[in-house]
Length: 225
Image 1 (tube, rainbow, N blue to C red):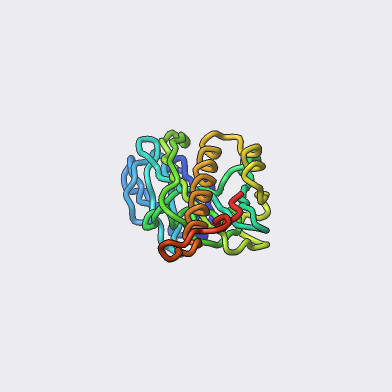
Image 2: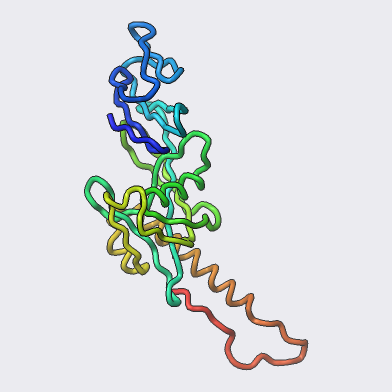
């Protein structure tokens, strides 16, 4: 079992093996154990969430769909778009920040939280859902929702700085680094949306002319690469 405080996930593959949680686990019947006030079947697979001292939530795994959220972080630097990638903890592959949507959070909340914890990024979600994909882990179906995140600050030190690498890439560089197709599809959706927003903004900047006057020259454009 892995247990970490401050909003991180505690993973207990068997309720019978739950140890180290501050309030402990109490055996109620030969088949059940009370964990933090919740009666659970011994041997069930669990995900436990810490939302503060002495406050825990849980969800069962193995026979349920678990919601995850993913952030596609971007910024504009010297007239071009850049995307932030991080390495995964297991194989060190380049990915986007993502994690489980904890009870009480929206997917957008979770995407921002994971971007901060895993990549040290602060910012805002921009626009609607980019897309979804399905993954499988812990014997469960994971439904991952991706959101576009505009980064306002990248911290030099963050929660997982010692465990992950962080890199800013152009869209082309990100395409080559992202190994998994779902990540690449979300990247393409993000690029398409940002370019469309840029074109709309450029047209909105063109002033209207009085009737009968011809427009001279080209309409102003913005660099959307």
